[in-house]
Length: 95
Image (cartoon, one colour):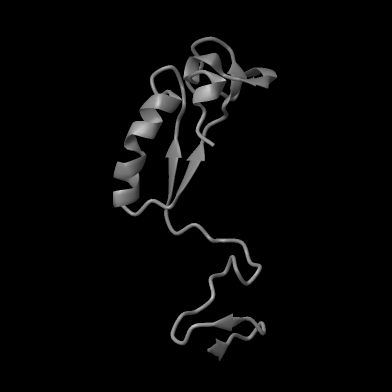
């Protein structure tokens, strides 16, 4: 077994991940989802595999909180304690 610089044991030829070394993971490719009445949680979940095949490693999303009805951007939040009902039920929110 080879020793890493951090005194952790690892197999020869395998570098420790940044996360295992205590560093945050850095996104390689980010994609923004603009959630609104036309792009719900359900529809977004249907394209995640496709985005992954494209090499997308992380998602950046528009605000998910309850905003005014018909909002196309979600920045006009009306209730910061609830997920926007137009995006889907709270139980369908991917975790």
